[in-house]
Length: 237
Image (cartoon, rainbow, N blue to C red; front, side, top):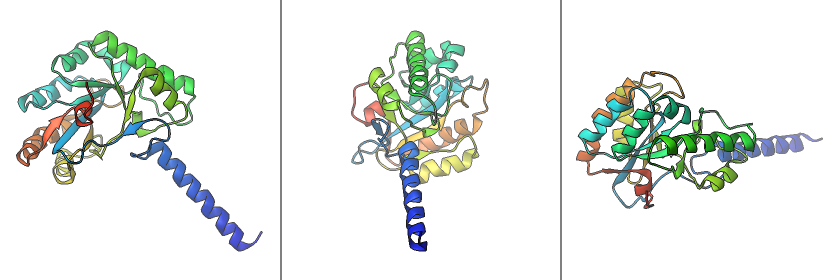
């Protein structure tokens, strides 16, 4: 085989690998199922979302949101709802939207379609049983989509939701998260933060709490308003 053929073959492999990586984790990808990552760019609205809850710190987050009359969407793990059902009900009672974030927060890559469906269906049932909501939105753990997800979303009537901006609040300090939120956001953005850490007990989410508490007033002053994901997509909750 000639050197040119080898180079061409390598380039093709790299291109295919890049395309597959986009399909799995690209925020705008709908390859493995219907998915959105932002709302109407013409409206000065933002959607705050929180993954991996509920946790022991979720009630403190609810107080911050209530102080500013800000609605949010909470993508909950079934195991956390099972462990803290009263906190899950508190989220619902406060008027926030609840989405499905699987039962045990696994990465979906290389897992079977049957496993993916069971994870999503179990979370759906647990959330329905402990709150008044039947989730219509789904966020894949780690943003990883895989074969079988489209079928699971269809069977459970769930729309996939990625994000416009992710706060990296599992790693960054509060001031850096706040700067990101204040400086990067634009109309229609869906913001991904966390009120839990996978299915850990009593996770430390102080950076998230401090960043949200500081950023919300500044964003309101800039003329943004906050909506749930369904509202920002102009869908009925």
